[in-house]
Amino acid sequence: MTAPGIRAEAPAEDTDDLDVEEALALVRDAHKETRDDGPHDGSTGRTSDRAARKPGERPAERHRATPWPRAREIAARAARSRARRAPVSVPLGEALGLALAAPLDALTDLPSFDTSAMDGWAVAGPGPWQVREEGVLAGHAQPEPLTDGEAVRIATGARIPTDTTAVLRTEHGRIDAQGRLHTTREMHHGQDIRPRGQECRSGDQLLPVGTLVTPAVLGLAAAAGYDTVTVVPRPRAEVLILGDELLTEGLPHDGLIRDALGPMLPPWLRALGADVIAVHRIGDDARALHKAVTRSAADLIITTGGTASGPVDHVHPVLDRVGADLLVDGVKVRPGHPMLLARTKDHQHLVGLPGNPLAAVSGLLTLAEPLLRTLAAHPAPEPYTLPLRDAAQGHPHDTRLIPVVLRGDHAVPLHYNGPAMLRGIAAADALAVVPPGGARQGEETELLDLPWATAGIGVCFT
Ligand SMILES: Nc1nc2c(c(=O)[nH]1)N[C@H]1C(S)=C(S)[C@@H](COP(=O)(O)OP(=O)(O)OC[C@H]3O[C@@H](n4cnc5c(N)ncnc54)[C@H](O)[C@@H]3O)O[C@H]1N2
Ligand code: MOO
Image (cartoon, rainbow, N blue to C red; front, side):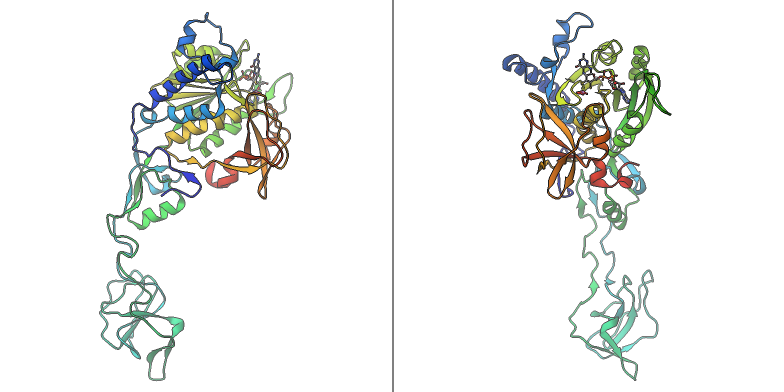
């Protein structure tokens, strides 16, 4: 089963080993297209053009940048197959938000015995009935069989005595002066009896592989006899915060600023399905960054800052040094165009988020979200559009992501959407995907929902 509004994607058992290679092929194809089609199409600065450069030299931005939709595809595909961890069996209490890696087959009939659907009397044959002294409650042993003309008080969920023909609801029965039970309504055979196996028989498939474990799935699994379920484990993410200028408390002073990404990224990554195993502050120290990257056991390393071409932008040189494959090196999106995606090891990827905070959000949703979604075997959200209430200025060649609030059936673009600003996104419900050239007032525009707008704050961030 797939929740409404989402599209089923790669099932958890998908072990097609070609997927990562496919991603690399895509990148190579994109590179070819760039040469053929001029500067506005996708490409990355992978080893082939790395060889043609002098050490430390970087290819021109326009030639490297991947179009935004393609960058998301590459990120989603890069995480398939070999990058995904083996399924694990976890207690029900730890399974919320994970994808089933094995089908949920009923371990029992449901209901597991014939049961009363109402409080009232179990009756046998036509009335009036003699009522037995002792009633039947839920959880009790099998009651004595009834004989024709006999009734017994019964509670909802209690076992039905053998030879019961119907259950008469309390509000539809009347006891006469002689203590006999009469019905005040017409009755039919089998009414208000839930027969054993009405919902499922033992062995029936209740939910397929890939189903997201929701609170309702936990309830069903428990009802069907499960103590543990087999799931795709949460991908492990490690966050490396770069920058000597960052303070972790107090007011900005003397050119130092507060680190906005340290508090923002871990809960956001959790909302995207990751287990955040560590947050390290690296400063602007290339050696420390190299050490942190080579030592990391995470499935996904997220770095912040240091992606551009400043004197202390160490991400590219460190990736070069560890022999990483750059799958995406710059994206044609504003803000956030210096974002990157690399495969650092067979089972490990690195997403380099630009340091400007809204640019980092853009990188998170463009590269980290599809990657984590695929690692966790979660379905892709169904794309949807709404008309924009106001025109949105676009970039001449790149996609723009603009914070919006959803009002009625319109998306309203917010101000304070500059790359270094969080004031817009902090008030937003979604990001509007504004195509190159901009969007007119009333134009249907793709939206990316923000996790707090769709799932509620308590559910998804902890
Ligand atoms: N010559 C060029 N310069 C820049 C380019 C470019 O293409 N050529 N791109 C600009 C864009 S766009 C962005 S975005 C940034 C990306 O820069 P980096 O990823 O190298 O990030 P930093 O230089 O380290 O920081 C940029 C900016 O963000 C602030 N910052 C960094 N980390 C945090 C944090 N954790 N919390 C709050 N603010 C943070 C940092 O102080 C800088 O102000 O490069 C442009 N330059
Ligand atoms: O693209 Mo930068 O990402 O404008 O801040």
